[in-house]
Length: 219
Image (cartoon, rainbow, N blue to C red; front, side, top):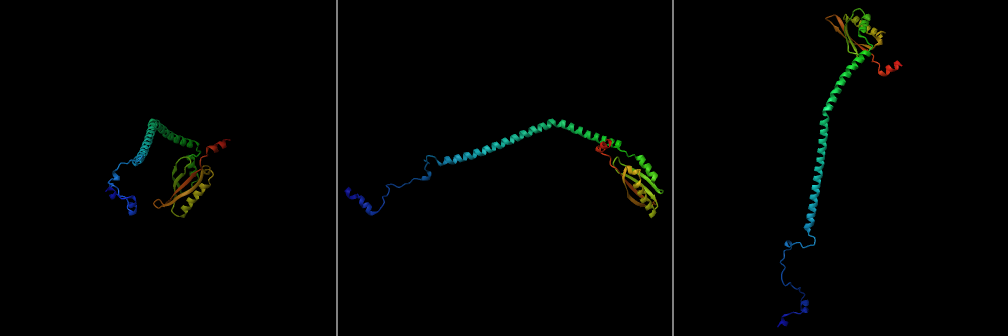
């Protein structure tokens, strides 16, 4: 009986059919554990740990740099606070020195100045023509211009000619030319109420000789 139910190998090859497994495969491959020698999760965890370590190292270095900068600033601020009183005293002493230096320079310039205001006013009176009067002389110090205010009697052209002639005589005067470099008529205006011409004369003083020039002159 058994021999009749079995098929020979030659019969199977002749039929061309593949042998069917004796039972179906019901395995869920996605839910099976990873049994490889080196699991995939190992590489994923290694990369994640490396990235986290790099970020942590960057944060630590940055905080260390910030902490060092803060310490440096604190040291600088401490030194500034320690030297501030001395710096303030030095500033006050320098300001006082500048004030005293200015006074000294003014006195020195006044002493070295050869210009004498009384002699200047006296010379103006000596060469001043008739009809001309001097009202005010503004002398602002050594090396600065002198402004002389005066008037000329009359409102016609002859009064203007007198003013112009006075300026020319001042420009060519040998006594004044020793200290005065130039004389100009700064203003000439009619004063109807007084019947005169108001005039302003500007005298430019010659500059004071420098220290180098004085040394050469002494030699």
